[in-house]
Image 1 (tube, rainbow, N blue to C red):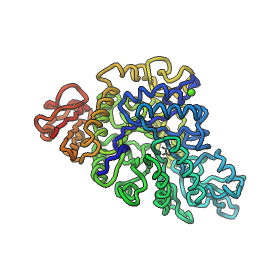
Image 2 (tube, rainbow, N blue to C red):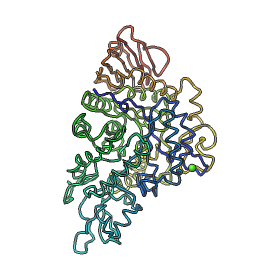
Image 3 (cartoon, rainbow, N blue to C red):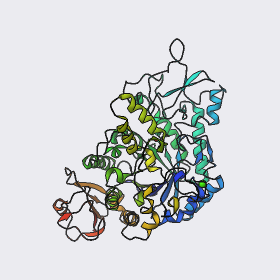
Image 4 (cartoon, protein in one colour):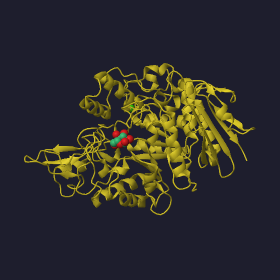
Length: 555
Ligand code: GLC
Ligand code: CA
């Protein structure tokens, strides 16, 4: 098993718009980040991943980039970014940038020139004439990820362009070598500045099948078999991989619908490896039917099955990531835990995923147990994906309007995009101005200041277990996974065994019920040392709701 610095990281994700406002305009920014670097360091994490900071019309909140070499003026200047980069590095924190190259914004100058037919740029995007007598039918039946047709008519050019996400996010044509040169040059630009890695947005979508054939008719994401992945994906990724040769940096690819078997085609160690790790999504469906807009209630068995599969299939051959939240996922306590038992369930969730093998991620606000937002109606929602899901559900005529809203409120990405709750002061201390988005009304109880001073808080628990993951990294980060009580729908029990003989035992009651501790007691050796847990005190005969423990046996 290769041991490399980026495998050992705990990474803190910042979604800049809602992290911290430094200038009082209500929008999070780099000045705000600069002021919180010590806080981030205090968590014991080793890196920051920034969701896009680049110039963008913000139709998809930064994932629609209009200039890859400029900072969004709302967030500050390039000087501000350099100050954050230096400040992070001075504290021993690595910096990971989001690289969004499947698509740009329709306001990117490449797209404007492409639409105008400029010879240099005309093939930068995926243009096709319309079909039918009047030429007004889309070139094929593909549907976008944000549901709706994947094609948009452009009057100026008199053709359709492909967009796998929002209308304002035209897909780049990676089959064009000039586009690939642009990508490599953008990568070098940021690496030369000193960034330590990239999180590569929907990277498995960048190659599309020649001829763009019709997709198998499915209600969602029709056509995806032709681009997820496409025929040239591995070649293009290998080409981009070459750029990294000159730097000590890593690549993390976001990979929707990825299975362990297919993942190995990208991340298997050795010759031909294209990415260092991936964000897969399988463990994010433990409370829903395929997509989060169809909630079913949380199933621990589903979650365990996914963790087990990835732990086993990656062991010794490839590397994975572990996360429970990000800017696309609702808050995990509201999904897999209990809002009523926020601290307890938050600790249990933190415990079960922090000791799995893989690079570790924590999303802003997760460490204090922020919850989903109590949306009242559609006026409260801004996320483009939620509106697309609404349209789609309405078209099926399967759900009442009330039900559609309830599902969307549960699943909306807006849940994780409310401002970080720093204190009990006005606007949760996020801004002195008017916040761009709703502050969760629970901020008076749930905030960094309150939890910082409370030794029993979720925040201090995260600090503790992040430190333990590092201290016992042979077992926690690199160890072999062995699971017990696999069939239990309430208990999650596993062991991690390090090459140095260190053994860590993780046991959690992931339910609201008190259960017998017998299946756990059988597993944990006598004399094992308790390192951390939801409640004070060692394992007794029964496990309380969300009671979790970490035990150590040293060689
Ligand atoms: C990724 C991002 C998401 C974005 C989409 C399109 O899934 O994480 O926020 O909307 O790609 O760029
Ligand atoms: Ca601001």
